[in-house]
Length: 272
Length: 272
Image 1 (spheres, each protein chain N blue to C red):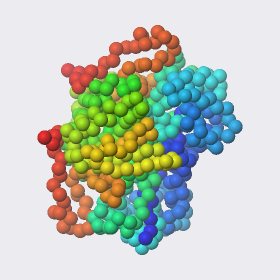
Image 2 (image 1 turned 180 degrees about the horizontal axis):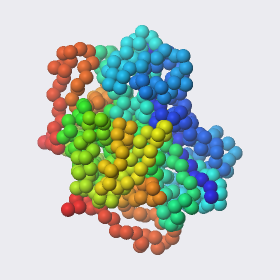
Image 3 (image 1 turned 135 degrees about the horizontal axis):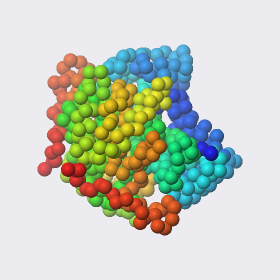
């Protein structure tokens, strides 16, 4: 019985890949991945056998990886970001569950964690994730929009920093509009919003704007957004969320505590 | 003017560090970090100058890093996980904001993203983060408990997978008890829960249990938990969350869709 590495290689530039991700690719007989992902790590793959498929063929990739592992091979299923976040890891397990293996008889699976989009994007934006955050995909391909909208609302009401994956595609353009409208019911129009396209890749673009103005910026298939919480501030084109609501630490001296602005946030309340 | 790298080196084992994190440490004149973090990457640091402080001295570390960068040095502020998630990145910016720099005059900051605890823990647990998730710290040191409890409830009601950072410490033992009780109002007692201690370090421990039984397992300072959503399943000691609620893909054939269990989840409803 072979082994499957499910490898997230991070945003795409080799410097943000982990040693283990590189090692997993080097130790594999077969590399399975979406065309764009294969191209991003072409140098590492060398002359290993490669199975490249289109973007929507995740199920084919997962099934092929399991079949090849059953025949004794070591397979690396690769993707950008973290394969454990909206990634291929779950689908590999779903295929195994469907096949009804006895414990110990099934192929060994090693999920190799990678830098996920939310972490890559946050690093480029400054420090937006210093407090509790929610990651929400706006794609309604496999999830009803009502479920997604309810999550956006819950996260907005409870003052989470919010990362939005898959905000928009060519045909799917209204979800981000509705999301903005839900968020504006709970957050100040001036709330900082970070919009990052192609983090750490060619044509990277980093914008910090506001909740009110976000739709006037380019948002597409390669974009991830981070919506600040009620205490996130803009600083020289970056986003900074303080660590907590009660500043027990002082930065410059004993009088610091007295000079803080009152917290604009109140439990469960909306602006209106 | 010098530069500050804010470096997350991942869970702690060198193989899950990125190339950029290693490079940042190698390019720095001074390494600033909590004692335990410095020890974890001792080999990489070599004979570079080191400023080690205690766990609660984050403000001291941030201020020292800024002072040293002002004097022209290249400083690496290091921590485990991702320095952008509940980490040092925000505090560095808070110190700069407090000092009132003009744009362009302030020290250059590069946040180097790392594998965060939620990603490391998820990889060891299988594939729990295949759908929307919320990260919540149960530490009420800087945040009122009411805010935290409200977030747990919002995330539970909207069926997020939930990652719990800082679930418990020596003196802080009740938050995880109250959290379980909130979660049980919205989720089945049999919901899979993953408990991981010291991911990818010595004395690593990975348990998959249930919401009902979670408090009968060891939970402490070095533990991160992941609570499944309504569709998360246990598989051979791991946790798997399917990718969506509407399974538009088939795994073994055309009849697959008809054999699916009905979804137990309904918008905003509780079990009772």
